[in-house]
Length: 414
Ligand code: HMG
Image (cartoon, rainbow, N blue to C red; front, side, top):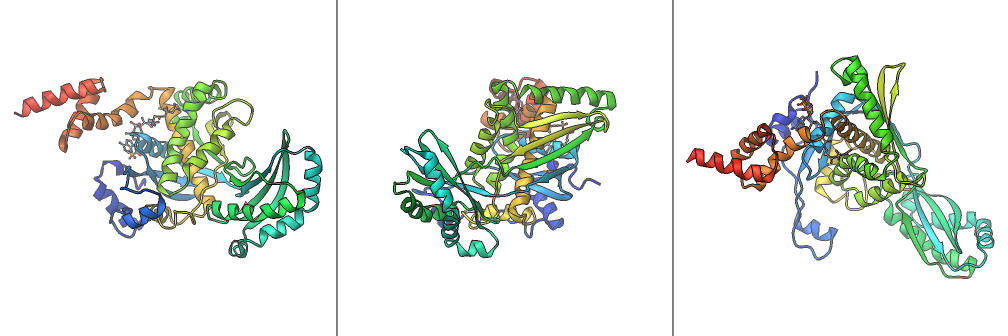
């Protein structure tokens, strides 16, 4: 039995009650960000900017059920993720190597090879210095792991890999790198340009897979096969044309960013890393891969992303909404959360592609967008749902039509 069928038809209070009944939350109390905490998180603080927090349902990732908190301002993203997770049924993911990378950059070098040789000879010494910094991280099994080098036109970069356990780790690695700077400078006898973490680690990726039988994808196996072929064609096309690839990837990030915001993670870092990864073969390409498995009679989706989320540290620990979201998710590890985010990205992509290559995006997306248009036109209370229904029925979901129908509705009531 699907516990969440029709969940979206409940009121927000009823939804919270349902989550409480299912023991996914302790209380139906809504969480807010107090002013004194907000003031510690940013500068020149005035007040909080609000965005809706909703939940996507039906997610089964690595045999664990999740109700996924999502913070997003765009109608249909949460519905699409829930819909896709219902159709796809389950996701399998791995994140074999969760690791941060930081770099110390030295420029204006006459002989880069010689400099790298010298630094390489002292690699163990540098690692020892790096390990002397954050002893609590080392006690937890994390900390600096390795050092390697690369060169770029008269510049050398020393890369430090770092295991930040479940924490974001930005402060930890930056402190370590800055500590290491003076040791590097004394070895090479020239100044370092900068020391900073990199938000990109293409060797530490999350990989997620999901599949759906042709039979479950369409009204019957033949219809499902035809739809699957069109989804594959859409995924292949997104490898060729950057105009399409950007929108394709935007659809993936719809779900990912929403989960990152809800859990207090740094979505700018993840966005930058994913777009660099999308360009790793020299042109910007769609990030997901959909293919046909003719033996299994199914459509198979893969998504690989260099995402590295945190469940501890930074402002996550103090942000009450992030804490509420992590509780709802059953306190996942950083690895589990990263795999879940990638699954939500694949689900978002599937929902968008399925709509795009069949009925088009407007029916599903615009029918939910029509509630925003109703509010924009001035509808209040019950008028919003009434007007949204009328807009959907009229087939013209635009602002002018919303004004027109609202005036008509109000004239009738007079
Ligand atoms: P549908 O088939 O009409 O939905 O799809 P349904 O009534 O059969 O319901 C199926 C399930 O969807 C429900 O299961 C819910 O889980 C969920 P049930 O509860 O019945 O067991 N669902 C909802 N959840 C919350 N609120 C709702 C709601 N309705 C259904 N109101 C749907 C309707 C919108 C889901 C579908 O048309 C869809 O997935 N469309 C895709 C929409 C989309 O991708 N939106 C993202 C924004 S567009 C964009 O930015 C990205 C894009 O440019 C990316 C790209 O180009 O690749 C498109």
